[in-house]
Image 1 (cartoon, one colour):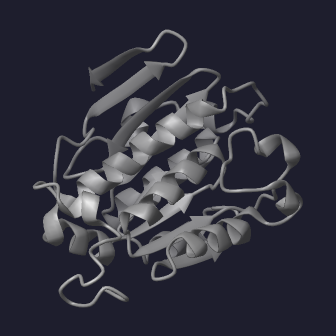
Image 2 (tube, rainbow, N blue to C red; image 1 turned 90 degrees about the vertical axis):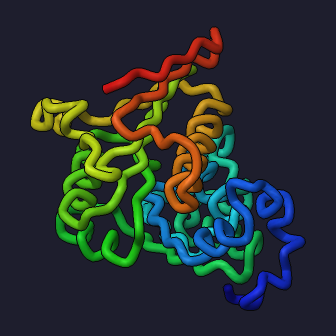
Amino acid sequence: MEGLGPDLRLTERYARQIMLPEVGEEGQRRLDEASVLVAGVGGLGSAVSLYLTAAGIGRIGLVDDDRVSLSNLQRQVLYTEAEVGECKALCARRRLQALSPHTRIDAWAERLTPENAGRLVAPYDLVVDGCDNFATRYLIDEVCHRQGKPYVYGSIGEFHGQVSVFGYRGGMRYRDLFPEREELSAVRPKVQGVLGTTPGFIGCLEASEVLKIVTGIGNVLRNRLFTIDLLTMESRTIDL
């Protein structure tokens, strides 16, 4: 573990996590050895990447070709007004590297496409969804299935969101839940309102699923879909 030594000499950084019996030093080592690709570093990706970095994931890849805009700042907590107009992936890497200098942060200032998806996903153990359109989600699902990697899914809108894990230990795929690929992929993302905390909440849940998968603890949302409405705080976990 770079910077921590073979016996976790800098355990103070992760002390509150290591003291959990379910995690311990072995779990922390697993986190350090893990690699995660975050597809999109907007609202969802901001929360996901911040918490994965803070938790001790050893290598994190960021894929996003967008630039920071003023309207992002209400929910995309990685960025500042001084960074408006700059590349999100590069700004995110700078922020995350400052949070954890010993973490390897890869930044890919490009959109995930059928041409590059296989190459970008290949170095990582699993992929986390931070995107905002069906076409990219189907692409992630396809590449993860082909490479045998879990896909942690999250989606938000206005005051509600949902989370699941696909392709984990032989579990169902994204396309099994949403079989209308051609119709949904043709839908163009539309600008809609969203409460700033909605992507933060869902992104934290996605990050939690990653930590559970890597450390082998808890009940992963395999073949289950968690949904919540933040206005009413009504939530459900649906068996798929």
